[in-house]
Length: 93
Image (cartoon, rainbow, N blue to C red; front, side, top):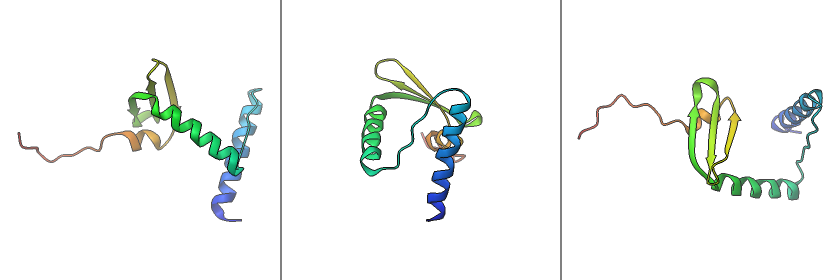
């Protein structure tokens, strides 16, 4: 088993345990067919995004979908990936 596989297993187990403490059940899948289905659904969901608010300082991104609904994502790196890089170079014009 690779180090990444161990990390993925540990992360999924930790999340399921935390949700159980909240009396909410969670499901985990790593099976190829189920993962492919989840990825396809996520792609559809992401394709419905019409606006994004990234707030790296608080580790949050808000996706606004074409039906007006909002999806709030707490993440240590997603808001940084979405934020526009700062440039201190002067632009002409």
